[in-house]
Length: 151
Image: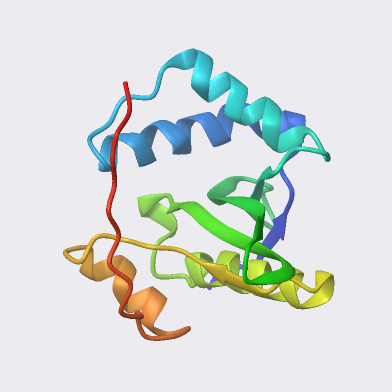
């Protein structure tokens, strides 16, 4: 594994992050409007916003090779903050180097340090590659998700 640093994004990461974000959206066969992408980037840089991000960078080159976006939110069953891992992506050239694992591990460590109640996420049942990574942390639970898209 190439040595990586997991850290909050910096302004100078925007171009590399955006390229990875576009590849992530393409993987999920979705298009996100430029204004939404710009707003996401701005929100991640605001310390007071509930939408956050971390990036994986190569310790030698500084190149951004992956990201995780997460949302911190309250919960009705506990007074502890929960962390929802919304997006996780590692560029194809850097896969197999435990970067995805390092990104999740960083969130878990942050959660322990800050007293979060849990870190959680979901993925498609057919996403075998991601599920191999996720199962290293904990097996999937029995929650079934329902979604109502609103206009």
